[in-house]
Amino acid sequence: MASEPERVILTYEDLFALPNDRNRYEILEGELQVTAAPNTMHQTAVTNLTIILGNYVRRHRLGRVFTAPYDVLLSDTTVVETDLLFVSNERRSIVEPRFVRGAPDLVVEVTSPSTAQTDRHAKRQVYARFGVPNYWRLDPDRQEFLAEALENGVYRQVAAGRESQCVSAPPFPELQIELSQVWDWSGPAED
Image (tube, rainbow, N blue to C red; front, side, top):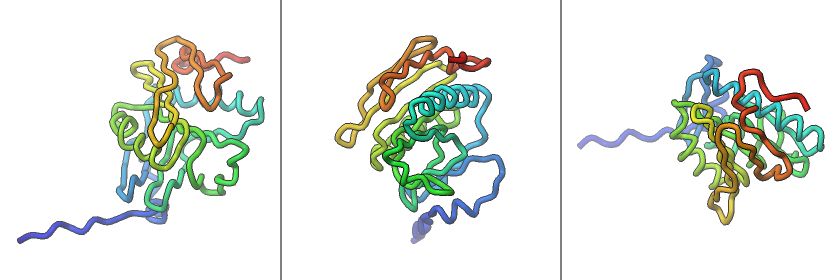
């Protein structure tokens, strides 16, 4: 009778030893996840939202915004590379020289055709399990925005928008984001 192969559990140290080959590597509960470099629409949305959030956070001195590639160690066997994240001043102690150790205040995933399933299901469950209070997901192909907040260990939708609508969501309820500026090739308007 053939036996099942032993499952190899990877850690952050294993991840750190992988080659720099333009692939994105993450470990979800000990299993390696590999995705190709993101496409132009994905990068446009990430860059534009980073500018919008970065300017707002800096202007109000709220904390720091980081973009991928940047590791988030939720545990030794769960290391994610979110597209964008925010850490408030109150939680700045989780920011270390090589990574963030623990749950950021906000995690943003911009879906691509190759990552949509993982972002909507596996990573969302991981973020809830490790207590990430705010999870935003953007789909540049559909021009959709979804924001969820963690309540009693479960995400609840707190905002959604499409195309050129204006949205606001925790942890920045006063910030109005015009979604057309997120999808726009030329970037957000100067304020």
